Image 1 (cartoon, rainbow, N blue to C red):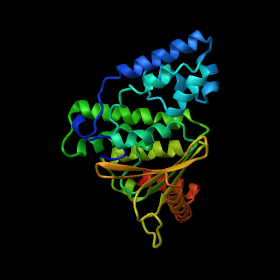
Image 2: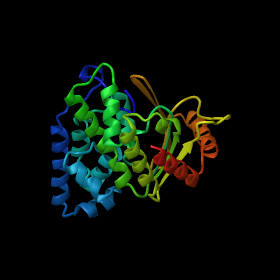
Image 3: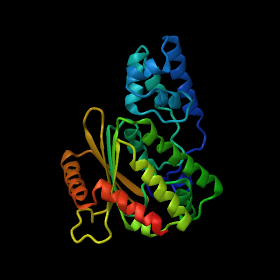
Image 4: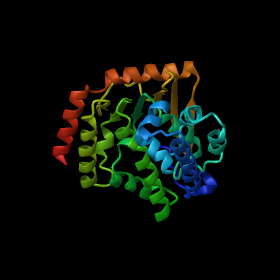
Length: 282
C-alpha cells in the first residue's frame, strides 16, 4: 500500500464500494440547503468551501470534511441531523483506514507540503502511471480493486483543481523520473503532466538532484498540512500503516527538515529546466 490506497480487500482495511450513505448524506444537505433558500455558491460561502465541493458532497462523490459538517450544521439550523448522519457515512472506496483522517484534513487544508522519494505522489500521478503501480502490487489486485483505487486517487486529485487558494509544495527525487515506471511513453506523459501542474500559481514543484551530498530527507517521505485554523499536522507512511502526527514538537521537527530540503533541492526554475531536459531525452 502506498499513498493511502489499499492494496487488498476489506479484511485488511479496504472500503465498501457502495456510496449509498454518501449519496444519502448529500441528499440531506441539499434538501436542507434548498429549504433554507440558499444556492450552492451562497451555501459554500457560509461553510467556507467552494460551490464545487458543495456539489461533490451533495452528489455523494466526496466524503465531507469534519469542518464541512460542523459549518453546515450551523448554517442550516443546528438541528444535529447532519452530525448524526455523518457518523454513519461509509468509508471512502479505496482509501486505507489509517489514511482517511488525513484525506479529510487535505480537503480543507490551506497549505499542503509533500516530500517523496519512493514514487510520484498520488496527487501528481497520471492514470497510466497509477495503474502501473496498482498492477505491480502484491498480492495481485483484481480488476475491480484496481478500478476502485484509481477512482479514489482521481477524486483526491480534484484538490489541485478545486482549491486555487491552497498552497501546494512538492519535493520529488530525480530518481522517480529516471526509473521510467511503466516505460518511456508513460514517463513522457508523466513529465508533461507534472510540468503542466507546475505552471499553476499555487503549486511549487522542486526536484532533489540525484547527486546530493547533504540531504535532510533521509528519514523518508513526509507530508505537512496547515488547517484553516492555522494548526499544522504531519503524516508519515510505512508498509500497511500510516501515522497522523499532531504533536506540535514532532511537527516542528518535520517542518524544519522540509525547510532544509527546500533549500537543498533545485530552484523552481531549475527544476522545470531539468524536467524539460529529461523529457527531451525520453
